[in-house]
Length: 356
Image 1 (cartoon, rainbow, N blue to C red):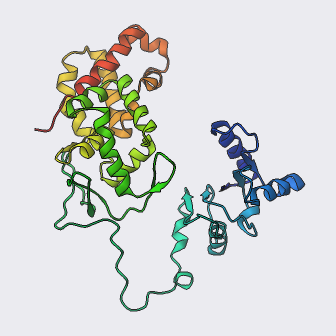
Image 2: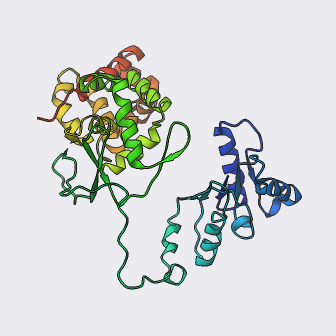
Image 3: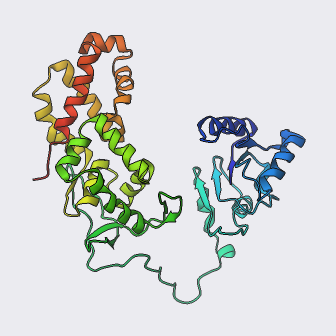
């Protein structure tokens, strides 16, 4: 069960509607609003939410009402969509998730407003006595450690500390050790980053036999979409892969590089900018000036945001952003078939670039 704290009552109603529109559950009471203006109906819904034997409502949206005095023991998620300026109120909100319940070993705070800064309170946590205890090693640390090599465009940033995870075949991969996160297995159980990485390492050979096949699948937006759908079905949704991308410190690289790195630990990743620059000459040699201008625009979005910008579904949006309308785009670039072919073919050259 989840409580979402919103900016005001109207915001709480909006978030309720958005959650229900996007929820897999078709129950109209899957997500409900409980605020001061909801009166007796709101109180009834709150009582049902507090009933641990009931799963509906699953999510409550509120503004101020539920920050105190809600005894719902099975709350697993607290979402903050409004600032919390009072330390006392912050502690009270956090307290909504601390109730004990069978098989509830933790709860999660989704903090979109940086309220976590209120956690720093020695009077609440207590000052450390004597030497600060060392953080436990969740995964085996093998010295010396190093970060995965990433070929970039010349800009250097300090390396983040890493730990090494040993995979089932005895080889190792590195992740950031200062990141606290958890993943979910295909059967819905929370698992560690080490387990997730091992599971993914075991699954990838079922989806492609070598790096060349991955490159071929990834360089076409249609087959790339199928590959991501297959990974999702196997218990590796895209959101988790993006989290893994952060853990292996490849946020400036392509998700393709992350899969390559898990598949082959000796792989040297490229930043998206380096990949685009390396492929420019080959791509532009095949294009006229108008096509070059559009592909330059697409590559800038790819560098800025990531591989999602290369999805086939994004093509109409990219055209509209560049040319204001699809009709104007067709006048400049040709008919839909030609534009689609241009969009697909340039990606083949983008992913042909290898690190020397």
